Length: 262
Image (tube, rainbow, N blue to C red; front, top):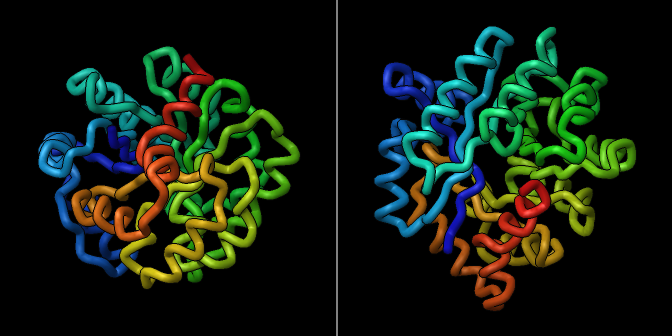
């Protein structure tokens, strides 16, 4: 079993533009266009059984359309997709959108502080954490040396303030800030995916950082449409983890997390 907890999807009409915009933001080529159909094909080819799918609302007016699209995508591929909704911290209808998402079967919330331009520890972000606490996990993009929105250490006071909040962090502690992010969050209760991390790290450094996390913390993610799933699976295998650590990372930890919300 392989579960990719970090896959962005977009409607066909805007998929290429959306993927290109992400590529431009990170100055990286995009492997795929980003449609749900191509993601399923990629999963079939690479052997990925399920995907956590989401998108990011960069403005308040995008929130409901995105969540409706994620709902429709999960409905089309119920055996392959687990939907996470988007919320925007400036949304005056935040509670309505949150409740709509959960009532319609979406299983968590995805936030991207750098795209949405809010600090992880801001009061506006705390409105979202309060809603999610005890009801669903929240997947948060972490890290970028170019910005000051998503530093991993900003999560530390959030863990204290919201003791029952399940946080899935992204990018092995923080994109382009892997070492400082790992130093801040290894050994905490934050789950951490490996999306958009292993391709940038030499093998020994990747092993070093991964082994600093508890075996129950790590999750597998590809950051589709940015990376090829087969290559990402091979990157994990190169770490030469124990069978137990490998299985927990590839599916077990996420399954354990989600059982809390059944």
